Amino acid sequence: MFVVCHMLTSLDGKIDGAFFGAAETAPALHAYGELRGYYNCPATLYGTTTMLGGYADGLAPSLEQGEAVSAREDYVNAAGLDVGNFIVSVDPLGTLGFHSHCIEKKGRPAAHVIEALTAQASPAYLAYLRRLGISYVFAGDKLLNCALLLQKLQSLFDIGRLLVAGGGTVNWSFAQEGLIDELSVVVAPVADGGTESVSIFERAAFMPAHAPVAFSLHGAKALDGNALWLRYVRK
Image (cartoon, rainbow, N blue to C red; front, side):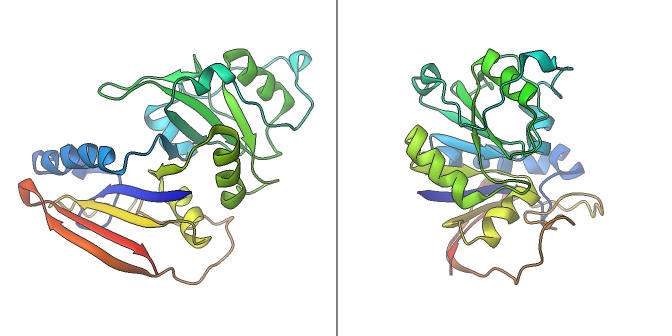
């Protein structure tokens, strides 16, 4: 499977924060959206925080334990496969809420949701996902096993190209396992100096320490509005 991590950043390497609201960021933001099409990936993967920020419907409601699904088996909604586009939602604990098995964002085609879970997801949450027709796969016991997740996405959903789009923790999870084939960074000509903003790659406290990950420069291109598109490949 081909995996590209495609991100929009500020000059100070942040992927969220006040710089998003600056007028000078607009051309870079537009280019970032256009370049998603360049990679032609049928599936986009987001971490839990990113899903909460603009894709999920908040947290899941209180769930009745009596409707639980006990089997730790992957679930594929065959009707979802017909959609042809996917949002892979990394949700290790099984906490996100949805209203449908499809997410529709303005300017993008409808996408079937695939929840990437660990064994920590409750049986009641599995029943909740099934009621909505949301597909799910198990990839790890406590921490996400990214390599296993890629294998399942390819074998169960025939996904051959995946766009990883944040946040920083999930990006680093793939990077430290050597699973990012290309890193695509659109840099906006803006800095905000935020000290609490998230960077492209971030190692959470619960993640094991890992040596730095190196990439080789594949291309650099100036874009409209003083933005820059940088491409790196796995070294």
